[in-house]
Length: 201
Image 1 (cartoon, one colour):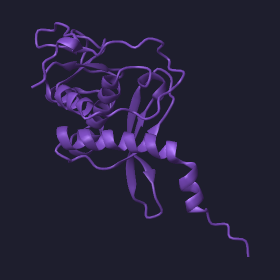
Image 2 (cartoon, helix red, strand yellow; image 1 turned 30 degrees about the vertical axis):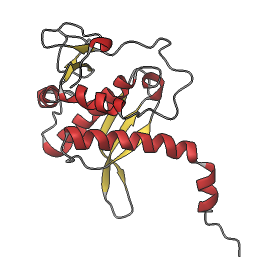
Image 3 (tube, helix red, strand yellow; image 1 turned 120 degrees about the vertical axis):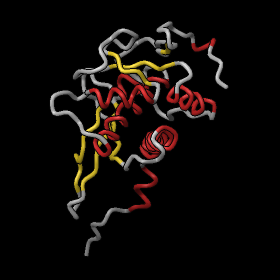
Image 4 (cartoon, helix red, strand yellow; image 1 turned 45 degrees about the horizontal axis):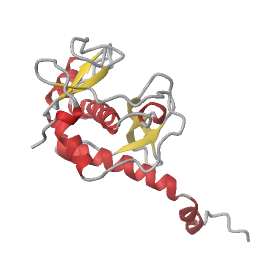
């Protein structure tokens, strides 16, 4: 008889880069879940997806198994995020985790993907929703960017992650963005704060 079962040892030898990049993504999810959501968020299927003009998305109950159990999907677009600062990857993860939080602990609106409840949760974490990605933009709507509040929970948690030496082991060689932009960080008055001048206690 021919053994048609996959050789797991061979698979392990062939897939270290895949393991590395997805383990790093899972580490990010868990890091922010523990420090910003008190570990309350359920597990998700984490994927990389190259969807045009979208940095990430979350989808409730998108996956199902043979026992008819469902689990959410959280996707990150490497074409945008890996050509940018680590802050933006982290912001996208937290942004999408706020959707996951709303799926399980809030009441998502049918009319708007980014509604007031989601927006309030984002603001409580110091990740400020803005249609422009800067102070003064709309805080609700279908398409939504965000920026960090200097010294806010999200900002401090990202800085702690960076201080630990975390970085993505693999990045997209051909990102959509050809230039690395400075992190979008503003103070309570809406003034831009240079990353080099930040003092994290």
